[in-house]
Length: 225
Length: 225
Image (cartoon, chains in turn red, yellow):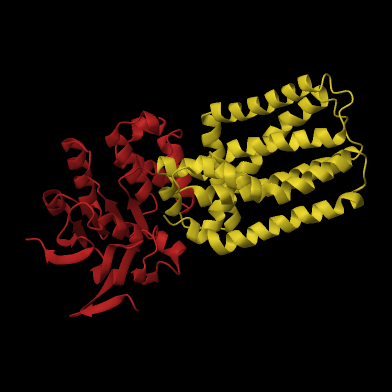
């Protein structure tokens, strides 16, 4: 298969393949051409200052933005030719919430979940696992920022995606909620995680590899520890 | 998930959100009723109002009600950041547009349900002999307005003055709907047969097909920021 490589005696699936991807907004380079591969099950932090291109890369991977050049493959699927199937394997948490204020947590999850043919039990499981049971009937506009973030994570993970994209995930969260969510993500086995952050400290808690972007250039690709 | 079931789910979500914040739909209905009442006062009992004037008034009110409807279509998704959520769904961009079209059609039909009885009472509009043809013209006109309006709402959603731009663009785009609709309504009030309004119905159908073709070619790019 195109998205598999041999490493010694075991075959590793390539989860994300970025080939010469760039993005220009008008005359401004948001991302200059670069290529990387991320293996299945890897946790990768995308670090860099504001305007480095982290969110643009996240949006390209989430199929929200078309790159100016290059190819992106998610588990071997070209996201711009086969976006609908690629999206089934992606769970994206952006820094803004994708939940509808007027609908309750449960109504929001049901709306998103139905597109992925999610079972009834899964709704209950994820609501319980993210400690949202007491708030499941509450309209999202009445939730605190931390609870809303949890509900948004439930929305992104309801279809059990293989690739989880977290864009500026820790921003605005208190210590307790951050710890809760870091512990939650540590329990997810076999998932490929790509998170963007300003803070290397928080990224190190979840990720073993980091990519450092600066003004649209990929300047560093290192493994922690 | 199939094209139509995805569109249906998006439309039902939008309607649920709309009815949970009932003040917007109520303001559209209040506008329609007030307009009918003002016309009634102005025309002094409306005993001698000609079919041309009545049908024009009905379509003018419906057009302005549609402007109010389309300002809550795509523009609300961008203002609240939920458009990203729609982009994470495993469905085509065209099914998102059709979902929004269905939503607008239902809202405008609801406006018609209020508008027509009030017109019979306050504008002395006589129930046409060919009432089903009368309803067919309104249905086709509303579907045309909905798809054209949803497409324009999508086109302007990332611009700064989107509400102003929507009002400016919607009229020229909807002229090919409004002219045959007004003419066909006038003829049917004057007891014309379906054969007499066939040319107007053909125009409405041709417009519908043209907008679907344009949307099919362009809407994928419209959703990109």
